[in-house]
Length: 330
Ligand SMILES: NC(=O)c1ccc[n+]([C@@H]2O[C@H](COP(=O)([O-])OP(=O)(O)OC[C@H]3O[C@@H](n4cnc5c(N)ncnc54)[C@H](O)[C@@H]3O)[C@@H](O)[C@H]2O)c1
Image (cartoon, rainbow, N blue to C red):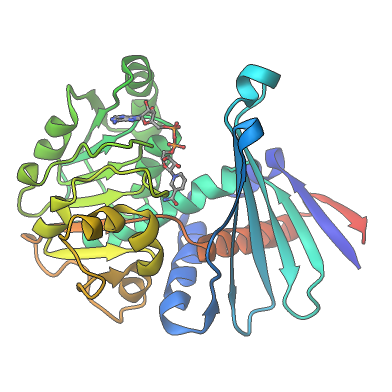
C-alpha cells in the first residue's frame, strides 16, 4: 500500500477551471440531492493565541470508493510574523473500502478556490439569463478573479464591471483581467453602479456590512453571493431575499447558520419553512432553476464538503493519469 503526495505546484499544473472540473463539482451537487450523502457539519478549531482558525469539511457519497477530508487554516498574523501567507490547507483522500489514507493533496487553498468558483458557475448555468450583456463583480480579490473565469465555462458576456473598496486592488484587477478574460473590464464607482448596470452580479468579499440593497434590483438580475461563509459576514441586505423570485443556496441548514439566509432569517424576511431550493436540486433537475427572463434570482453559497470531495477525487485521478506526485509507503 502506498500514499500519493501531490504538492501545490503540481496541483496547479494538473487541475484547472475546465469542463471536466465543472462536471465533477456538478455531479457532487447532484449527489447531494439524489443520493445518500454523509455531510457532517463544519468542524472549526479556533487558535486565538495565534489569531488562527482551522476548518474541517468533508462529504462521503454512500457507495463511493473514496472521499476527502479538507483541513483549511487561516492564521491571519502569518504575513507579519513569519512572512508567509495567512491561508494554507490540504485535502486528505481516504479509501471508503478500508478507511486508509490514499493521498494527501497539499493544495494550500488552490483546490478550494477552484471548487468555489465552479459552484458559482453552476449557479449561473441554472439561474442566470442565457444572454448576458454586462457581468458585475464586487470584490477584486482571489475569488473575484476565479468566479468570472469559471463563469466563462457557462456563459458568454461582453463586458465586466468591477468594484472593490480598495482602489489599488481595483486598479490591479482592471489592468490584469482583460487579457485573461478577453472582454472589456471597467472599474465602477460603487457597488450600486455594479448592481444597477449588470445582468449577473457575484459578490466575493469578507464584508461584515451588507452593501447590496433590495431597491437596486431589477427584473432579470441574478446574484450569486459567496463571500459570507461565517456568522459575522454579510454582503446582501436581508430585504434582497424578500425581493427575489427564486432563492437558491448550496445547503439550506448551513446557509441558515452561516450565510446570507442567516441574516434574512434574523430580520424576519425568511422563516426556516420559506421555500428555498438547494443548488443540487436544480443541478440534478429535481427542481427548476430560472424559468423566464424576468425573474430575480439569488444564490447563497457558503461552501460544502461535497465540493471538496469532488475536486479532490478529480485531482487524484489526474495525478494518477499523469504519473504526478510522489508515492510513499504507508
Ligand atoms: N462560499 C465559499 O465556498 C467560499 C470559499 C472561499 C472563500 N469564501 C469567502 O469569500 C470571501 C472572499 O475571498 P477571497 O479569497 O476572494 O478574498 P480576498 O481577500 O482575495 O478578496 C476580497 C476582496 O474584497 C474586498 N472587499 C472587502 N470588503 C469589501 C466591501 N465592503 N466592498 C467591496 N469590496 C470589499 C477586499 O478589498 C478584497 O479585494 C471571503 O469572505 C472568504 O472567506 C467563501
